[in-house]
Length: 66
Image (cartoon, rainbow, N blue to C red; front, side, top):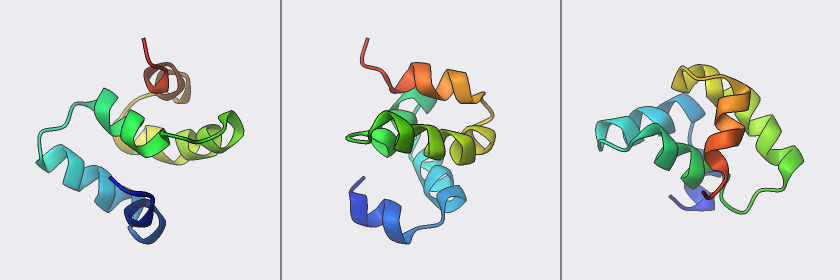
């Protein structure tokens, strides 16, 4: 998903669209947080984690490339 989609799309709608496409949570997290600095990723995590039904720490763990 491009930055433009993230900028102009409601976060809940974005997550709903990704889930409808069958994306696993890890892919959703990584697509949403790609290229973000740690502080920006934390801001996103605080908003997105509850919508993904995960914790903020889980969001931050999933965004890392293993």
